[in-house]
Image (cartoon, rainbow, N blue to C red; front, side):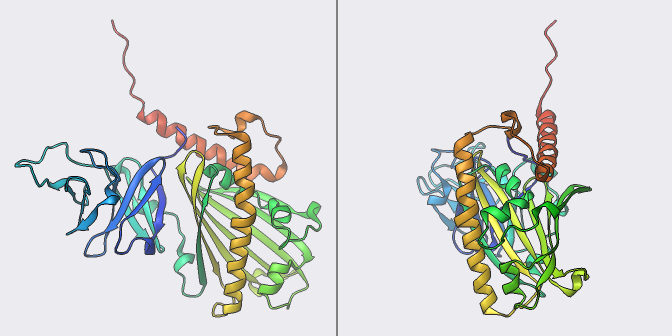
Length: 349
């Protein structure tokens, strides 16, 4: 089993599901999302149990989805409530429904056992709706497994090479890296003391810094939800005297080798400045779509689909510590969930 099911994933941005259905494959399962007349979001398996036509080809009728093929209606619970040519609706005429929660401007979905779904387990991403910050959202469809994307985010040393147009390599031997576990979270913290201010941050700061201490600290929550806290401050000065941002990275597997990548840049400086908005959008497009995405897709194509990257015996560097720790934590959770689903059958006498 390559995915953790009893957990929360992002299915969509909230504004992707307004007055039309949205079909999306999540964890290799086809799902259709729609809103009821009171604005609530519902999620159903996107396949009619009659002749297996995708439900999203139909239409929304009075808080139900009407199948386009034979007109069966399915409510938010997945139960068939109308079968036009039947005096009695077959009891098996139902589809799976998934628990969903709308929070932080995103629609979160629980792909596992519904009775285990607890909205309190959704990690804190309140920076995405913080009125004291400016938020810029984006989405990328990546032909790479979600764990490779996590590796990319957990090892921020790649920024000096993949994103060299924004970060010139300097004094890399002085980089400080620490991996910390706090409860269910793993933090991979990179500190870059007393460096020339990178071009990107120099633009953000309005050219007011020269030498800075820079930090990039990423927090991982199972299975694949990450939040970066990054910033610069004049060398030797408290962080409060500098500028900072949060970068949200919410990864949902489509399949074992493709990923829905939702991201959001949440800055706490120059929040009403359209010039900075444009610079951030440019950074998001270049860094994620033009630089990270091709690298990850080439990596996936080179290794093929493997359940555990470590089975290929990669050479490990010190900067891999966060990614390795996260992989181990995630694999432990997947193994525990898989074991809980295994029913032991006693031997025949």
